[in-house]
Length: 358
Image (cartoon, rainbow, N blue to C red):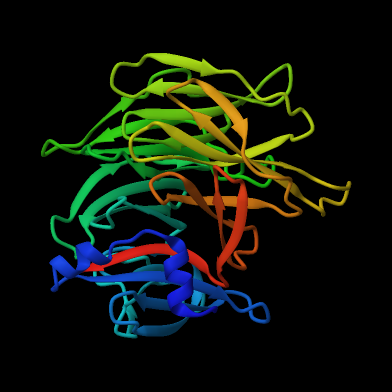
């Protein structure tokens, strides 16, 4: 990885003053570097901007996700859920128990890393799947079983996102045999799971939920990218509370048939996504541009040059003036400065996020 200090400064998220005013809290920027020679093998790097301390932890697995307790992941060797901590320890996750006989597990963490929700699908004797949804603070407090879905053939539930600033999860009903329709994750069958009351309750989301498309969740909006008959992707904007809907016109980019990794900023004012095309019939040679949706002005624009690979937006930075992104093989982290449309590499590893301990 590049110089630790240079990488962290280039991220530009400037929490130094905040950390100095609250000495007990430790702020760690977490990166993941894949081992190109060994499937699933990776190195986690916990970097403390204040002290300059860097701690590396070797791990083998997938689904690496930052929480306030450490990095949770699915171990590729024994199939259990593990936790990698900033002191260098690896251990079995203290309260998420995924047994070898279980069919699948999925989880999502709140934006502040303080909460985690997960679903475990178990296969019954008749091969139907029964999914249980759980919720807890990242340290295991307030552990709750939210929902037990009835057994269904070839269907499981999974959490998509915590809705920021609310006691609500966005969930998906997914068929396990749905064929991939391109390089990006597409979703359908979404619903809201409210957990403010002692007994969780589900409710439909606004708009037609049969769309199989890229989805982004904000504080009060849900965005869906739908293919326009004239080419490009229109952005359907749905207000989660009022149910009001608006459609932002597609960019005239018919040569890009794939769109995804749609992310929405914290105040629901802008969103970003990637538009990709395949270079040949064998599926190699991706080319990608990054597009911005101005939700206040209701318009879209391309904000990058064409890049010779598949791109995945990660997060906004520098007060929404820059975007962090990675490539399909997670071989590094780059920053796009939106005003200048300049791109710089900030780290050789994939930026997983900031972890706050204390």
